Image (tube, rainbow, N blue to C red; front, side):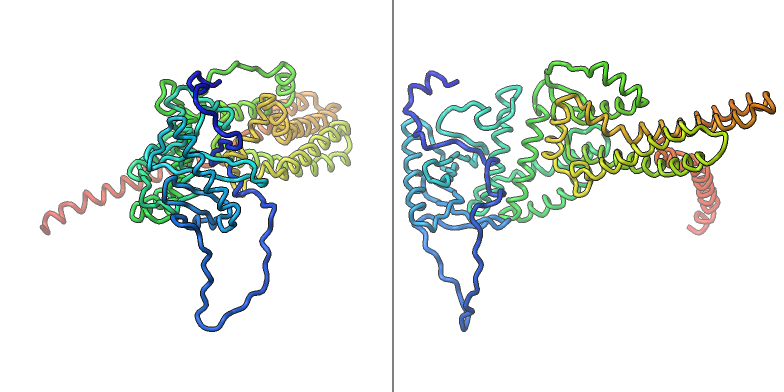
Length: 499
């Protein structure tokens, strides 16, 4: 809603539309295509003929290769539009002058540190704009706007909205870093400690909110130290602006500086209505031996308040892939064993067939889950991809995805239980007519064996193996330390005598 003061000011021309840097179509497929053709290699030292621009205007190249144009006279303006086109050139310059007059009429002061971004639509009947101020590192427009109109997320207070605008400012600097490198404040003395703290936090906390891993922080710090030595390079300005944009987004999402700041990635701090999964899911989870419930709880923990870090989602997919592959490999062994049992007399055909069907479900579901593009771990999924996937999954409280993820492990456990039951049935039929006592003892042994197999299927072998290996090596390491201490004590008198 617009304020009364807004209604009393002259209106903004209808062809001017506010935009933000994150709405750029720079990385989208272009309708036009570059036409390649042979060229003439001229004799001598050849130089391309320069294309002339109006006074105060110059062309620049963004480090990724994008050509853009900027003016260093009031109003300072930047654009990606084709300024070599005479028609567009005249249009841009007229719009820039008009925007300045509208700002003056609406009592908006344009600081010398600000610059105007302009972009014409394809039909040139609309012009998108925003102002970026390098002193306050924020964006502003000619009229009041609702945050929804500009695609901004909700905030907890007015002070938190500064991080939303700061993120867009750094996106602007990232897209146009080459024309004012000496006028920018990259705040590297502030950004470097942020990543140092982030690295330490990741190494000492299992639920850190920092968006990068400790290894990534270390790599970024190396780049930031280099940028501090050469802060006026457009290449350094570009990646420092990108990192600052990520930090501004991180501070907005973690409610940085607020009373209810997000200090733990797994704890919700946003007021939302609590939703519970239905009894059907609970019953189905029990039928599948609790595996869907485990996956649902894990997804809830990793996607809190509609936020997720890329490394958190990649860690989930890595563990899930390991479990799916493990279930797939074990199910092949069970399938061969049950196929052989079908040829053995005194075995139960229905149990063998049921176990084979469970193994078939394991094979099909495991291969289908691993083949799905959204479940791939290489290349690493971005935070946007992970967020989009989990947001869709959270619409039904992760019910459907949890059930799908649980199929390989749950049906493998069922196949294992049916195989153990098959062995018990075979043993009972074999010895039931001979020695009743041995029958009872054997059934107890096989029941214990079945319990051990089911428990073994649920053990994280890699973690367990590391724990056992550490326990075995611990006495040896203690003995070695004692030996070194004794050697040092024996050598001390000799050293003292020599001194």
